[in-house]
Every structure is written in C-alpha cells, then in structure tokens.
Length: 129
Image: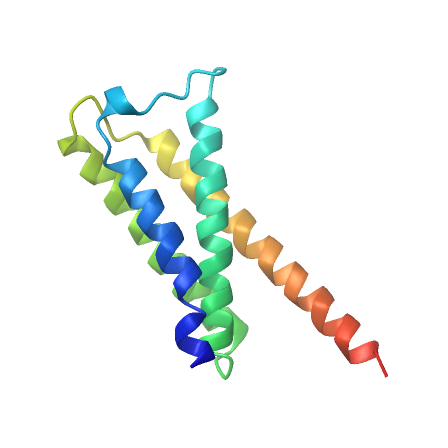
C-alpha cells in the first residue's frame, strides 16, 4: 500500500503544475523581477522531479538507479513539453523554449537533491547501531 501512496505527492504536484500551466495568461502574472517566471518554472519542476523520483525510487527499488533516473527524466520531460505546447492553445499564453529549459534544469535539480538526501539518509541509518 505504501507504494501506491508514494505516488500521491507526485500526482498532486503534477496536477497543480498542469492547472497553473493552463490558466489564461491574464490570470497568471509573475512580474516581480525580470525572469521571475523562469524561476517559477524551475522551482515547480524541481519539486515535481523530486517527488516523482521519490515515487519511482520506492516503487521500482529493484531497478538499477540509471533506469529509475531515465524513467523519471523521460516522464517529466515529456510532461514539460506537453504543458508548453498546450499553452499555445490558452488565451494570452505562449510556449517558450526558455520555459522548457527552466523546467528541465528544475527537473535535474530536484532529482539531484532527492538522490543526495536519500543517500545521506541511507548512510546515517546504516551507521546507527
């Protein structure tokens, strides 16, 4: 049952990202500073990458790490492309290569942070008597 529940955070974050991506442009504004929208893309995909990789990590624990990473990257990168292309059909929104690049950098950052945290936690747990 833990394996099923492990996907809930990934599904929730993906749903929130999708809702945000498909709101009309007039409803979404990140003009706090130049490039603020890229920071938002990076942060939301870092979170999505981390929670998705966490779910893959626990669900497919028997898989080699490189396969877990590949599955997560392909899945979330595809989601990023779909959300950018989908924005072409949303009023006052557009698809931007820079947004997609921010998504992919965020994905890599989130997965790296999750992996580093999980490895540190594993070492700490193994060292405890």
